[in-house]
Length: 291
Image (cartoon, rainbow, N blue to C red; front, side, top):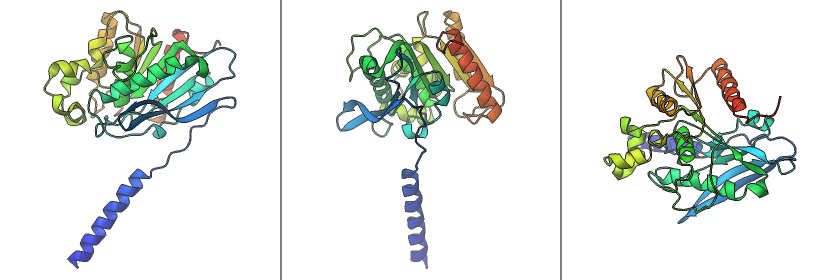
């Protein structure tokens, strides 16, 4: 009887493991006239290929703005295919790049930063072919994706993590959309943060080097921040200290607090408020269509 029970448990475990791996997502719906390039290889590290999906509008009369989207998942899980909500960006004429990066099991910190920087550099280098306006690049992400969006944009022309991708262009990000991303990892060195650090978690200088807060200066790009004040995964204060640092350096910023909001588990009304405030912020920067 015990043998049958054990077999049942093992079979059940295998089923859930396979089911998790075979999760399917709806394809991204994009407008007529757009071109979809799926699984574009933007960098190669040993036997790992960094891929992203690019939705561009080659027939647009003028080069289009671009949003680079980065999925979350604590640097340990998540796939680009889980990200499909780009409708408002398409409506505003944006091209979209949806990026995959190395997770911690493949590479601990700073691997994912290196990857997303490479994705940005690839897009800048291929801007003419993709009909992209490099003066109107927005980087967006939630949770760990928010952290990576901040790091990628705040680094600007700092080549510290561009070890796999060389570039000669002047990189200037138009805006960053940070959704409840961690900003000072020295304050939350546990769980997924500690795991992502690998054996360097006790090296505080290194931890600071992969923390967005320490790159804020007067030349930082405008940043829109949203965070739920009941978030039990990434403390609300992580966004507050970033906002205060940006204000201190007189960088354009806006901070939307979702009252009672958890870690991205926002109500329909709160999601609508987020979208409205985000586009108001981007409109003030001239990153929307003329009304």
